Image: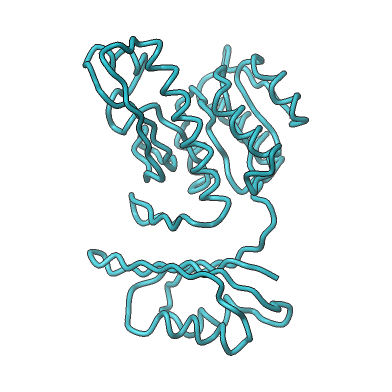
Length: 277
């Protein structure tokens, strides 16, 4: 049986030896190991891929006994990460994830798609994924968020992916799913926030455009950054051309961020992330 062990705790001498030593005592084979020390804040992070018989081992409890008292530990199997995707009208990020799942290129199970417009229903249903349209018309932001959150809760996902979901989430919504929401943003944050980002980029004469995937917190587009990527543009690219290239980057970055999360390669470190890839 293969599992992934995640450990995060205050840094001190001997942590790697304690963790790997306990794994050795139980006959577990380490097939891959990554570690990082945030020296500025004295935090230790470690991701360990293990192979062996876990049937008679409570590994997390035993590690808690030998590691610092406020350690954060988790053990994950190889089962798919369960995801609910939120969308509005743009298809590229949603379609990119659904296609990769169809190709079995992501260890993700998309449980449902929830949108505030019906436009993407044919796309979701084409991949046999349940689609729920919850309109925001006539509702306050809190009222709409509560309906969406209740529908998400019915599926109990591990992650929520905002596949170009063009709604600002209420603090209550974010708190309900804290640490589990991943968003895709259309630029290197914090550049070109707001409406018509590619028109803004065109007007500024930029030579690169990009996308940022990040965890969601209460501050608009200020959550811990997971991944960023860019592509080149030239003076010959108008706003529409930039938008087309930008959509391709957004799709790639969003899919990769979900992949990293599904493979348990992410740690949130205050308002930053540690990413093992």
